[in-house]
Every structure is written in structure tokens, then in C-alpha cells.
Length: 282
Image (tube, rainbow, N blue to C red; front, side, top):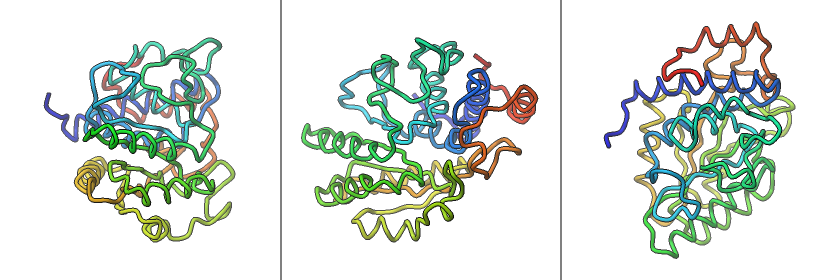
């Protein structure tokens, strides 16, 4: 099957952003800001970069795998999973409802196809991804493991323990991405806890670092292709991805205020007016 064009990926991303704001509005809770900022990345990953099987194999053998560490941006992941065929898009309408499989944070007990670990307790995703990537190497697989973390999440010490582990064990089939939007729930990261020179830090921990623009689809595709070419060379790969929280909606973009706030009816209508419906609303 041929890979989608950049224009096709951008059309999918527009629909995913519509899904995000509708899901959060419907539940009157959730995290739209980071979800909107990472939409292009998740769309590019699932529809372009990853070597995936049809359907959901819980064992994940002989296919690329993805782990979401910052699980609070579940709306974008749920939408991308549904739009790429893991479950019916109609299920998105149950977001955060009692007995729904589409809960506020991804969880395995819900039995939702595509979810391999419970996430949202920040700092843990990279450790899981490293272990999974190491298992694939031990099994003789040539597939990759991807992980996504938030930049505020890097305040967790476990991230750096995993970073050391991956470099020491030469886990070179992992591509970890940091959503570098400069925002977290309490405000700008520079005010809460300055991250310093992240590129230099990851390189000092023994990783090969690339930098990407996460809200520019052509640039993002080029960066993902570059990252894949760097695997298998004895070092783990870190994609330092600059994004804008709330990207795609003018009144949400670039501020931490929409980290965990749902739009009201008027704001939803405004947001949807800025996003083309391309695949059909659920």
C-alpha cells in the first residue's frame, strides 16, 4: 500500500483536531492543548512512519510499536487509533464516560485495541519503550519502538534513568520524541523548572539527537525519515520536536491555559469553524 501524501496527512490531521475538541467538549473535561499540538506527529507516525500490522496484536511481534508516556493527551491518540482502523470512530463519543473504553488516560483493563500500557503517571513511558525495544533486539526483530514524552515530563528522574540505560545497552532501535512546547499545567516550563539545553543534555546522556518542527507536516515527515535512517548505529535516537500547544485553533494556541480545559458551546463552534471536516465527524 502506498504511503499517503503530505496533503492527505494534513487532511487527516484536520479531522483529528475536530475529533479532539468535540471529545473534550462532550465530556466537559480533558486535555485539548497538548493533543492539538501533537496531532501532526501522531498522524504522521501512524499513517506514514510506522510499520504496523492490520488489526491489533497484543504481543506486538514483528511490527513497530508506540508508547504514549504523557497519557493525558489521550484524545489525539484515541482519534488517530480510531481513524487508522483499530476501533470504530463512533466510540470516540463515549470519551470519559462511565464504563467507556475511551477513558481520560489510556488503560489496558479497558481492552481498547492499540493500548499496550496504562499511561499518564508521568516519567514511565520511556522505560517501557526501552524494555520493549531491547526485547525486540533479543528476539532478532528489525522493527522499531517509538515513544512520546512531554517536555514538562522531563522533570521526572525516571526519564533520565531510562536515558542512561538505553545508551549503556546500545538500544539503537528506539526513537523517542519530546513534545517541546515550553508549556505545562502550571505555566511555561521556563518558569516552573527551566529545562536548559535539552539537545546538549540528551547528547551528553549518549543519544543521537535530531530536531524537528512538529506542526509542519513536510518538515516532520523529513525528520521521521532521518530518524529511521539513524537507527541501528549503536545509539538511541531522540527527536526534539518543537510544537505549539493548541495548534490549529487561534484562541488556544501557545498557552498553557488550554492544557486541561474544555471549550464551551460557543468556543467549540469557533474551533470547528477553523478546522475542515475531511473524513466525516463521528
